[in-house]
Length: 150
Image (cartoon, rainbow, N blue to C red):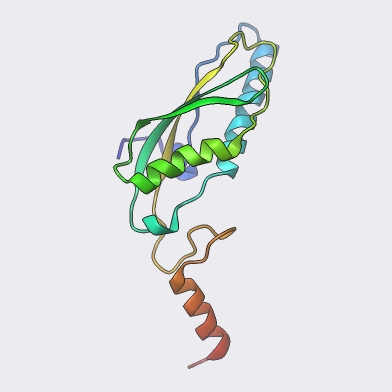
């Protein structure tokens, strides 16, 4: 796995945006827009249950239009696991539409590149607590509900 900074590994998602703004006020609005995009992507991050035990870092590039619509997305670095690669692309697709760029962003079609780091959760933990409980978790919950103190 590539050596990403600790803060990036901890969040599991990093976003690299090549946007320059000449003055402080403009930089603030661009940074806020970038943060909104990061938050939207992070909110759509999932770990595929079938990939339990796998980990890796993918790199995805994508382009949006001035309205925030996704124009294209592409896997530019594989995790080595097709399920994780597919999830990296799916995360970008689920996050659309993105916030429209502020006027300070000159590009008609802003391009982004982001690493998506997948670390498999330990056995016995829910992979995606919002949408998935692992088979072991369901069994353990049933046992705990039936057999208290056995």
